[in-house]
Amino acid sequence: MKHAAVKFDTACIHAGQAPDKLFGGVSVPIFQSSTFAFEDADQGAARFSGKDSGYKYTRIGNPTNAALESCIAELEGGAAGLATATGMSAISTVFMTFLGAGKHIVSTGSVYGPTRTLLENELVRFGVESTFVDTSDVENIQKALKSNTALIYVETPANPTLSITDIAAAAKIAKEAGALLVVDNTFCSPLLQKPIELGADIVLHSMTKFINGHSDVVAGMLVTSTLELRSKMHKVLCQMGGTIDPHQAWLVLRGVKTLALRVKAAQASSILLAEELEKHPKIEWVKYPGLKSHPQYELAKRQMSGPGAMISFELKGGVKAGKTVMDAVRISTLAVSLGGIESLIQHPASMTHASMGPKARAEAGISDGLVRFSVGCEDYEDIKADLWQALDKI
Ligand SMILES: *Cc1c(COP(=O)(O)O)cnc(C)c1O
Image 1 (cartoon, rainbow, N blue to C red):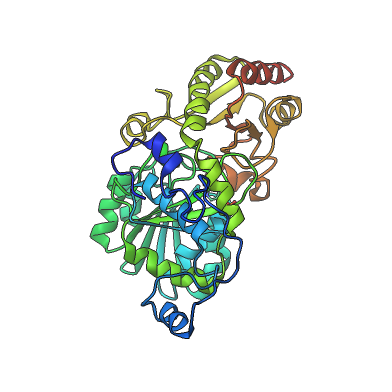
Image 2 (image 1 turned 90 degrees about the vertical axis):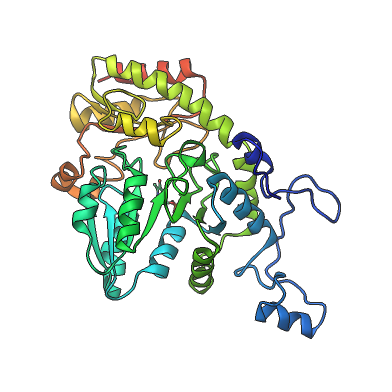
């Protein structure tokens, strides 16, 4: 069901989800079936030849998964969606579809760690060349292009530095170079940023984060600007086997209904918290797209409809201060991941990015006192009081 005329908050609740035809169930049924019966041999043959678009096997397609795909495609303003088992499965599907021996990719340097490792450790074994640059200056993308560049891959805001890349400018460069622009939109969710409207060819999500929003599912999504791009990736996904499970898809359909409510609430707290943190004596600096001090503040205002719910800040006192704060918080949960209903705090230098070593971290802009804070939907006063008592322990 298309809801082109409705607002985003309404589409979160209804897009792709008509009442079920058999009994009128309001919630999309979970089609927990690996396979689908054919009425006769002719129908089975027609399904396999593509003349009949009905379902045949869940790795290839499933009605619950299809409802989720239509929903997220509509929220992103894309032509079609393709759900995957995890965010990394979405990312590997893009790479396996459009890269290969002799192909080149230009990527944001401070991307999600495993995205970079996938290119540097695995895709390289199949003859794929990767160049990592600071894409917050799009000139760096232009300079990194080669005659064999097939993909430009941008994560904005980036993780955990929150630096921002101009999607429209990157799209123009990609078009001129005959490459596809892929945007990891996980940090924003489609509520705050719509890369396809800005010229991206493919948008992807770790739905594990804001879209599902309850820290109880891992899942991924690819949204394409054309049906043809979806069809190319669908073939590869079916072969690689990274299909989402229907029960998992249903949980995400339930989670996404409150996407707008959750992100707006968490964002309202984040705006207040970022401003207060900037004035706190134990804080060196705060990086948040809603603060005038953010290096791409003007771009963020133009490209995103709100600054989001992720804050990075630098503690005075480096690694030791970071560990002190992690051990002292009581309401925020000390855990990686982000975009859940609960506030999540982590210290990249001693956790997610510890294995990089101090030199590589410094190059990537991940300093020793950097804390990444994913603001949740608890009461703002509680979140603040909890963080402030932890800061007092430094
Ligand atoms: C978590 C994350 C991923 C990977 O998603 P999984 O669901 O954990 O596989 C990719 N990109 C970003 C920006 C993420 O935060």
